[in-house]
Amino acid sequence: MAPIIEKIIFKELSEKTNNIVSLSGGSINTVYRCQTSLNDLIIKLNQKDHYPTMFEKESKGLQLLSQSKFI
Image 1 (cartoon, rainbow, N blue to C red):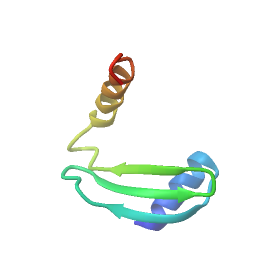
Image 2 (spheres, helix red, strand yellow):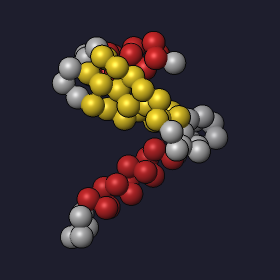
Image 3 (cartoon, one colour):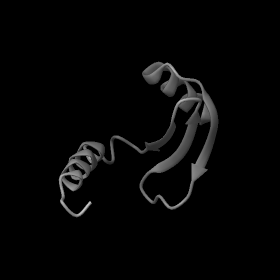
Image 4 (cartoon, rainbow, N blue to C red):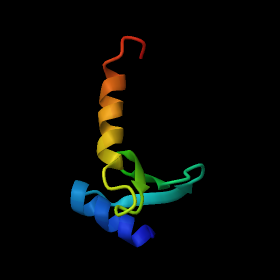
């Protein structure tokens, strides 16, 4: 899986990865912590046919949370 993630990060961010570590705890997604010389990234992967709008909904939820006065 690491070569695919490396290609995606390079394509999208023009950054090379220094380290990719699989994280535990996800039941729907496979999650990786990816370190580059500029950033630490979290990459979540899943089956788009099973969860076609999941990331869009998650993004909207995070936007709403960021507008909360409690955060």
